[in-house]
Image 1 (cartoon, rainbow, N blue to C red):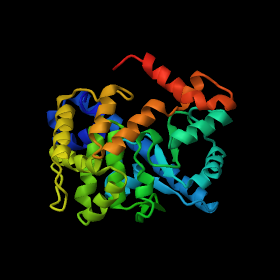
Image 2: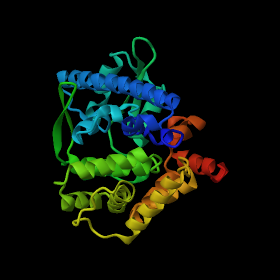
Image 3: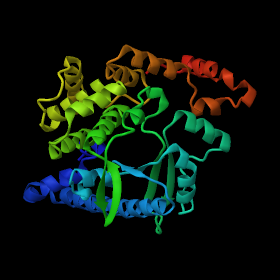
Length: 344
């Protein structure tokens, strides 16, 4: 249990052990069972809320794409109770963002991290989603919606949204509601980039890739790799597919281009995940080295480094609230703050 929990695998552990219940200590099995059912109840709340939010936005003429979570479970024909889901991810066009946020707030949500109007403007320049939070009626379950206007933060220098602008979408059914989500090919690229952004810190991230590959043998790999090339995410994509193959023996399509560095990166990540060693901390040098190793084009690595060093983020603005006429000085503020940060 101690190994499965940080990887988001407790529900799958319970399900796997159910057939061998006599081999598991009664107290351990009972705890697993209780946590499995608690997770199932939480996921049910998320499914119902996702259906309600999609209907709300559609009623007001706002197109929305459901990402990951229940929509992904439907796409891979997976059992929702076997997944751990912390939030809902909704993608809207930037032009619809303010209206969508107002509608969700009117449903009882609040900003998880309250921002002033000026901070909101800074946040939208550099981030890609805003988190909205509410509690259910007994204040026991928190419902979190990540409302996206982009697919990646600016500092990653990985324009995934542009590469997927004309990507196919499909309809999936969640609790009787028909929702729009990305088709298998763009979803796989999103999962690869998402795993990298989280430093592949959980085995469940790899399991999502493996299940998608295995349940969609019709994936057009040539089109998918071409889209990854557009945004400089070829190695990120290929290493994700190889990592899933290493850890879950998922299919390794013959049409997949060969990339020795992607395979080496996948082996390194698999070894770390199997060893139990922690993933690099967010914002650490090790995390940024992983990001850079996952990019194949020197210009993308250079652009990412430049944005990391010089483009201010919300915490830089909050550190020193300069008047608007002096906002040009924020790159120097960021560089000074980075220079005083201990190396990790």
